Image (cartoon, rainbow, N blue to C red; front, side, top):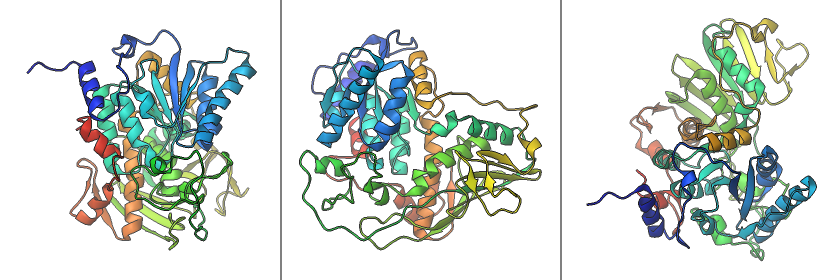
Length: 459
């Protein structure tokens, strides 16, 4: 048989998946090692709180890209995405671009005038559009967590490798000076032998279940549910009318695992960076958590997870610690977070931990560092510069997958409430089929990354 060219393979796979709405003419500048010489053309998938409050402003202010399309299953939010871009251009005094508004991301995947996608959807809608985009030859910036399930993460990592696209996960703490410096200090041996790490994450409160409500006009609720089981509509399950408000889906475990991935995706990423564990993971996990009996807001409440990493490093993750990471070694401790954190620790007389703090000031002295890590001033800009240069960004798919896996196996340990052993090389639990069964989820109807990956021949 005559081997398929890369373009022929992509076209055939997308056609089989029903993703080709028009002939796919992919600009040659999107392939190979040469960087695009003109502005990057992007589509935004998901126009909610994180998109309008974080991703879209950062992309626009980076000055390297233009939005040519926005997509959301909520018609009002999609319109709001276009209005946001238009407002930005009016304020900057630049020509208003033509921005297409769609409700189904598949209408955009094969468009030759789109170079990349910024995906800011609920967690259960991360994997499928990201996988479809990279296999269609598009670069992707994906909000954290990388995927809802471990199985999806394996497939998305494989798709990025097969397609050669530039993928960045929105673990933006890597682009913050204090997190980079903390990792450099730990990896340079400033603490002597590293013994333990304490990670503090918040929790989300629950609330009584709302009764079923009519589906709002303009919301494609079936598509919003996507691969998850059908459930009656309530605003509490999805999102409210005020885009800036915290949406309800963050508190339902069909769409989000809770703060163990919500904030955990950020702090576990820094943990792996500091431990130089970007290609590995924990060896043992034990967890417990309070899970509400409510049917809607049912993600975990108070919790404690203990993990063992190579080198006998004990990692404890709990809601009782200050939000951030404390690295503890023979020579003292180093703490890092996004801002000042209150603490009852008697070793902090002022009662607050600074964004970068230590048991002794000299532990933070940058002189004599043995390890210097890649620097970035802004995470979205780092991705766009990587798109131009065709180089790896700070959090490419293989790096993103490992902390995401650690979050997911922590959640599984919390659910099962018993000790687990993890084989980071095989990416399976050791002798525990019941735990392995929680690494994937069934997919409803025609939705889902696993189903799409099978159609696209992603191993």
